[in-house]
Length: 401
Image (cartoon, one colour):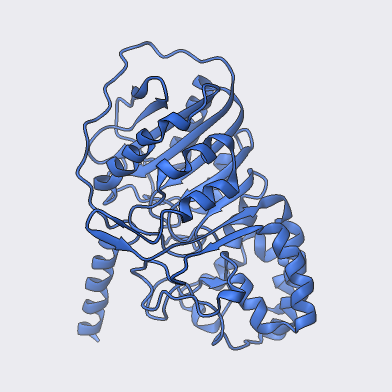
C-alpha cells in the first residue's frame, strides 16, 4: 500500500504541473507603463475585463494569450474599454488597457503581492476597474486553472505566491458568487478554464450574468484563440465567443497539436426552469437512494481521476428518460443551452481523462452535471452537493441523497 500511495502522489504531482494549459510560450516584452495619473474615464458602452489568475504554472503562457489579444486589438470599438488584470509569478499584480489606437498600456501595478483567488482581493480589483472604466454593460473572462464546483479541489484559480493575507490559494464557487453579487450584473461570464461549464456552477451564478460560457471538460493548452473572439467579447456576443473559440481547434500551436475542445453557452435566466424540469424527470430514478447505472453516461474524466463527478447532462437524460419525456425535457434544455459545439474529431485535449472521446455525439450537451454515488461518500462530495443551489432547485432532498 505504501508503494501504491507513493505512486498516486507522484502521479498527482505530474498531472498538477501539466494539466489544462501545458504549452510554454516564450514571454514577450512587458507592456510599458503609460506614466500617466489614472483618472476615471467617461462612461463607455461596455467594459471587457480579462481576469488572469496566473500566479502558478500558467505564467509561461500568459504572453501567448496577451499576444493574441494585441493581434486582435483592431476589433475593439472606440466605445468599449478592454482591461486586463494580470497576476503572474514574475511581476506584482497589475492591470492594463488594450485599445486599437494605443495598443497595450500598463495602468497600475500593486505595491505588494496579492492573492487573486481571495474574495476580498477580487472584489477590490473589480470595483477599482469599474471605477476607472464605468460602462453601461460589463463582460468578464476568468482565466486560470479550475475544476468546477466541488469545494477544496481547485474550484477556480491557483495562487502559488498568495501574499501574507491569503487563507487559501483557490476560490470556491460560493465565494465567487458572493463577490460578483456585489457588482453590477454582467452580460456574460466566460471561463477560459477547465471544467467550469457545469450546471451547478451555472445555478450559483444565475443572478450574476445573462450568459455563462465555457467547457465542461479540460480545455486545450493555449485556451481561447483571443484574436478570433475579440469582436465577440467586445459586443457581448456569447454565441460568437463560443463559435470563435471553436474555430481555433483542431489546430497546431507552435510544436503542439490540439485535437479539439468542447464548448457551450448557457442562458442563465433559463436555469431555474431547467432545474425544475430536470428534477421532475430525473429524480424518480433516484428515489430512496436508488442508483441507476451510469455505464452509458458521458464521463468527462476516468474512474482513476479526481474528476469522475463530471457527466454530460444531456447524455445522462438521454440514457434514462423515455423518448416522450426526453423530448419534453429537451425543450427546456435547448432554451438554457442554445449553443454547444463539438469538434469534428469528437475528442478534446485531456490530461485527467484517459479516453477523451464523445461516445454519442447525438446526445452531447456541452454542460456537465453531478449525480450522487455511494463511492463519493468517502470524499464528502455528496454532502457538499447538498449545499449547492442546484441541489435545492432540482429537489434532490426528496430522494434521500
